[in-house]
Length: 264
Length: 326
Image (cartoon, rainbow over all chains, first blue to last red; front, top):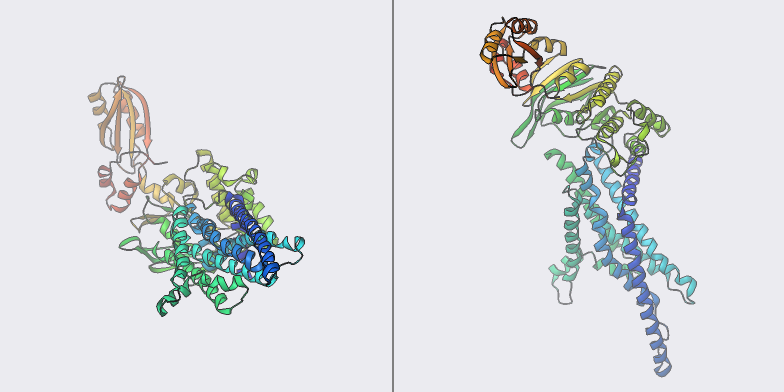
C-alpha cells in the first residue's frame, strides 16, 4: 500500500518534470507529427494501389480488395518503432542523471522509500508518457472507422500497438539504467541511443543462411519480436522476451543505484 | 536518541571517518564542528542511511542505520549541504511531494506543510518556482523539507552556509526553537555558531573526534587566547617596546602601517585578558591608540589548542593567518 503510494508519488513528480519542461511537448509533437505523415503517405499509397488492383481485377480477375491492416497500419507501426528508437533517449536521459546533478537523489535516498520504488516509479512515468504518445497516434487510425466503409480489423492494431509499447518499454527500461551511470543528461542520452541502436541491429543477424549462433543473436534483437505482433500474431514468446528485457533493465538500474551508494 | 560507536567509513584507501563515537540525548542540540573534509558530512550521511558504514554501528532512536534503514529514515529529517530542491517546482508543490515520500498521512499533509512553511517563514513564496528563489529562501525551503514529517531527529549539514547575517540569526533562532522537541545535530565550521545554538559540541578533525564538550567549557579553555590587533599612532620601535612591556603579552609583531600609524598583532597568554593593560600602556607611553580589536582564533589554532596538552606553549606555535572565518 505504502509502496504503491510511493511509486505513485514518483510518477506524479516525473510527469510534473516532463510537462513542466519542453520534453513531453516536443516528444508528443514529433511523435504525432511523424505518425500523421507516415499515415497520410500510407493512405495515399494505399489508394493508388487499390485503384490499380481493381483495374487489374476487372481485366484479369483476382482479389479486388487490399487489406488496410497489411498495406497501411503494419508499415506505419514499423516506422514508428524507428521513431521510438530516437525519442526514447529523450524520455529517459534525465531520469537519474538530473537527480544526481541537483543533489536531489540524496533526498530520495534518505526518505522512507526504497530504491526499487524510485526506479519503478521513474520507469512507469516514462512509459506512461510513451503510452500517451501511442494513443495520440492511434487517433489517426481511429478516424478510419468514421470515414471508410470497410474498416480494418482491430485485433492486429491492438497487438501492433502493444508491440510498439513493449518495444519502447524495453528501450525505456534500459535507458533508465543508463541514466543512473552519469550525472550528465547529454552523456546519458547519447549512451542510451547507442545502446538502443545496438539492441536494434542485433536483429539484423538473421538471414536464411544464418547458423544457430546468429539465430540466437537475432533472437535478442528487439525488432524481430515486433514483426509478429505487427502482423496481429500474439505470441507468448515475444511478450516474454520484451518483459524480460524490461525487468533486466530495471534490475540493472536498481543494482547500479545500490552499488553507487556503497562506492560513493 | 543517537548512539554512534566506533563508526568508520573508508573510500577505497582513504579513511573519511575513523572510529567516531558519540551520543546525543533526546532534545539535545549537538554541534558538529570541524574544517572542511573532516568527515562531518560523511558521518551525517551514514546517520541518514545515505551511505552504509564500513565499520562500527550507528543507532537512531534505537534503530540501527544499517539493519533497519526505513525505520531510521522515518524518524530523521535531513538537510544536506546543498538543499535537495527541484528548481521546476513551486515551493508548496515541492513540499507536497516531500510529504508524500516521507509518508505523511494524506489527512495531515496540508497542516504539516503549512506548519513547516510557517516555521521556516517561506509562506510568502509558496507559489514561486524554486529555481527563482534566492539562496536564503532555498536554504529555508530545504529546512522546511527536513522538518516536514515532524521527525524526532534533525540532521542539518551547514544550515547557515551562504546566508546573509540576518538570515543566519533567524535560522539559528529557528534551530534553537526546534531543540527540546527534536534532537538536532548540526554541522558547521563556524565556532560562534556552535556557542549560540548548541548545548554540546563534538569537534572532529581528519575523521576523528578531537574534543567533546559544552561550548562554555570550550570557550573557557580558549579564553583570552588568540591575537589582538592594535592600531597605534606613534614611532614603530617605541610602540613595540610599550606593548611588549605589558604583563601577559607573549609576542608582538608589526603587521603593517599607514599614515603614521602602525598595526601591531599581539599574542597574549591563554586565560588572561590583557586589553585594559595594553590600552593603558599605549596611552601612558604617549602614543595614540586608534583601535584595539580581538581577533578570534582560526580553527587551525583551536585544533592546536585542543590537541596540545600544554596550552600556553601552543599559542606561540599557532600563528594563524586570519581571523575567525565567519
